[in-house]
Image (cartoon, rainbow, N blue to C red; front, side, top):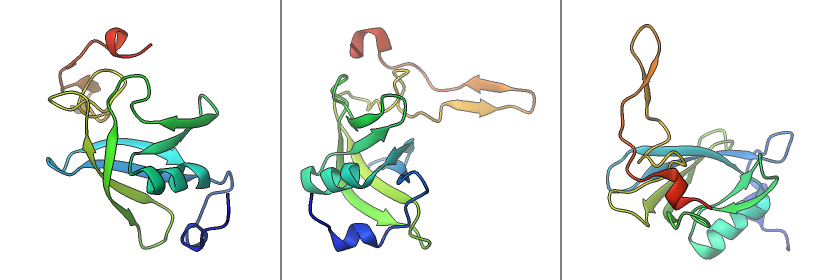
Length: 132
């Protein structure tokens, strides 16, 4: 892949990764946090769909490649330090939308009540049925 100057404007971490927050356009909900490398960000810009770097799989991961819950990118915003990316997305594939591998709308479904963490958002689809 040729060099793209806009990718050079980003402050990548020591592993060549950039933290990314995905926010749903329609609700304003923060859906998930993930990582991108240069190739993932370039593919995201090229395709208009979120492509992340999976640290557990050690490969590019097109969001929704197994579940069908694709993130259509509407806007990309870089923070003031140029080291965190915000993706404003339409979360597709299920109504209501599912972004989390647990079958929930958002990965941020656990709330602290002063004593511990508790799941406060429902499972919308059984993860066993939406993931291979």
